[in-house]
Length: 302
Image (cartoon, rainbow, N blue to C red; front, side, top):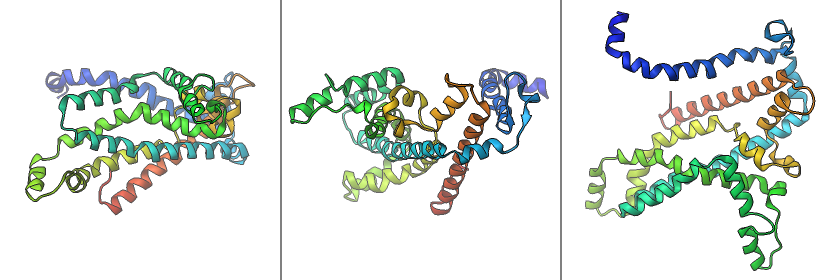
């Protein structure tokens, strides 16, 4: 049986094996390290010999007022990122789909897709130059209207808008591909029938295109909601500075400082405990959203 399977599907298994090994080594195997969250972990004693403390690390985390502050920052940052960035690719895909000039459509899609390939470091550097208080184009425009230059990167109130803007700029073109692909599967006969009935382009979008996209929109919303507590730590670390900590310090940066911070002795147990709490909340959000979606629209991921 095994020989027959290898003979018939050997090439498929060979293609699958590298990805499967990566999944096991870097996704599944590290899950056993979560036991650190229930120990007073010491790198000298190791996982098996470290003192077992049960839920003490979780108690310490939940009783720390600063945990709730960074949790609030994380939720607000992720919430505004989701609210702003989720509908933009849908709107962009709908507008691009209505473009009749094929060459222009390809150019626009390529240009919108390009920022996705720019590294976070380069993207943050571009943003910093764009909002520079001395020679940034945004402040130059403000000065033309008699408004004094604003040090955007040093003001905590501007951190979230700048983060959301940078996220949208880098991701909307890539995210739109999913919806553009879904539109290609819509039966052209539906549009022809609507034209015969006298429907205009807006009515076709409203009654044909959007309903056809609802399943993929729901799926993408559930996927995005699952990462609502996960912000781009690299982007945050590159954008934040001590003057913006009140809004820019999030769970990921807090965990990073606890587990790998250069100041003080690293506390892997507290970092793991907080990371586990974050993952459980995200899992609960995904399951709840999926359940509500199944009840309201009869469409769910699983």
